[in-house]
Figure: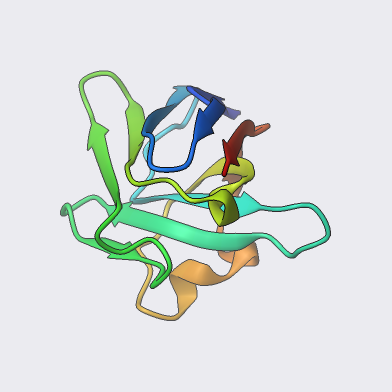
Length: 126
C-alpha cells in the first residue's frame, strides 16, 4: 500500500511563498505520474500541477509562472514551490500519484489517480 504524506502548508500574506512537500512510501511504490491538487471550501478539487517520470511538467493556467513542481527521486519526495501567493490560492492541497503517465487532459481528472494524501492547508491573507 502506497502512502502519501504532505507537509509545508501554513498561513502567509499575499505575495508570500510556501514550499509543500509530499513523501511517498510503501510497498509497490513506483509512480509514473505525480500531481498536486487543491480544494477550496465549497469548490471542487482541481488540478494544480503535475510531473511525470521523464520530468515533463504541466500547470493549471491560474498558477503558471508562480508555482513550480519538482521531485527528488532519491527521497521519494514531490515538491510544490509556491511564490507570489494570492488569497484565491487558499485551499487544502493534496498530493496524488498514479502508475500511468497522463496527457494534457487526463492529468486533471481525479479518477486517474490511485493514491492520495490527506492534504495540507494553505491560507493566504490579503
